[in-house]
Length: 195
Image (cartoon, rainbow, N blue to C red; front, side, top):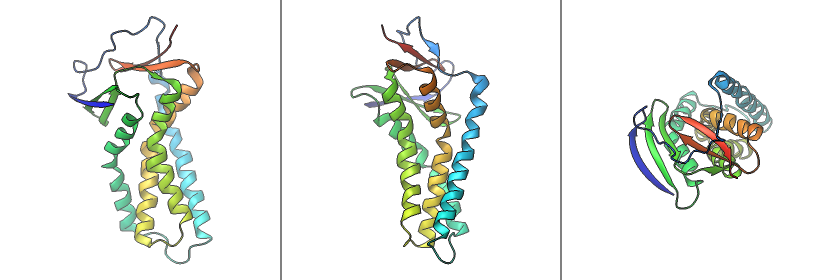
């Protein structure tokens, strides 16, 4: 995988896949994008359940307000690491264009990604930056309150910024066949079956 800086993402500065098949279909529609935000509910429920579990074996003060703020703030610069984790999962030898957009850093692979690889690629930051730190916080009781608070807030912040990826995985599971591919072309994402 090779990263290639492309500048600001715009209608004029965008990757266009030259061999988009005729059977390519739009991956998602803008009418359903609001549903993505409903995925914050399971993240909050997971945080609540985690707190309830941890209350059973940790005595005293469980959180530091300042450290919670630091943990959430720490999740922001890790958005670049989030995107790099996506890029690392791209096929060997592929080129990944890097753009600056209103959403921050955006990475766009220039080759089609098979469904299974796409699911792994989409979930990798959720696992590495969200689930693993959360489980560490949950099951390692002998932690300093400040460190514990930072890890908890960082994991929940990272999971919160991953809801778009999780939503796209749900779409991929619902729409794409086992042998389907996904590609970004222009400002749209498409999926298709190779004949």
